Image (cartoon, rainbow, N blue to C red; front, side, top):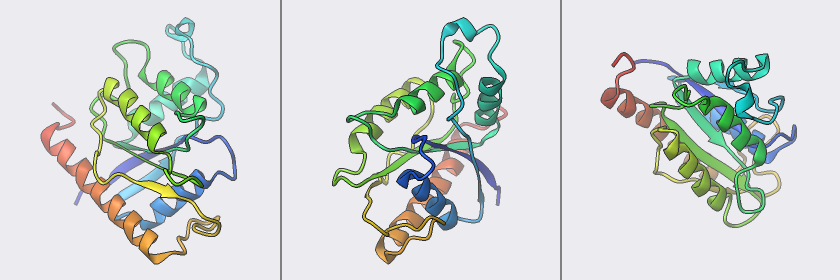
Length: 190
C-alpha cells in the first residue's frame, strides 16, 4: 500500500497550543501509511504581491514543503470566530502568485480544538471556503470539532479519554481513505 506524506499546518503560532497537542495526537493515532511533517508558518512575513517575482527564502521553503506533501492536514484554533491571521497568511503565500497554487488538487482535511463547546466550527467553515477557492479537494466527513478539556491530550499527544482517541483514530483512517480516493480520481501524473 502507498505511503502518503502529510504536511500539517497548525493554525496557532503558540508553542503550548492545544491545537499543537491535537496535531501530536493525530500523528500518534494515524494509520501506518501516513507520514507527517509539520510545515511551520511562524516565520512567514505578511504576504504581499510585491514578493511574487521573488519570494523571500522562508516563503519559498514553505511553499516547496506544501508542494512536496501528498496531502495537507489543517489543525486550527478559532480566533474571534474566524481563521487565525497567521494561517490565512500562510495559505496566501502557498497559493500565490496566480497560476502557481501549491494547494491545487492536493487533498486536505480540517480539524481543530477549543475549550468552547463549538470547538472551532466557525473557523473551520471559513477555512473550507478558502480551500475551496484554492482548488484543494476536502474531506467533508467526518467533521471534527473537539472541545478541549484539561488533561484531554498530554504534551506528548496521548489522548486520555478512550472515546476521543477512538474518534480521532477513525478520523485519521477516514483521511487516509480520502487521500486514496482523491488520487484514484485525480492521478498525480495526469
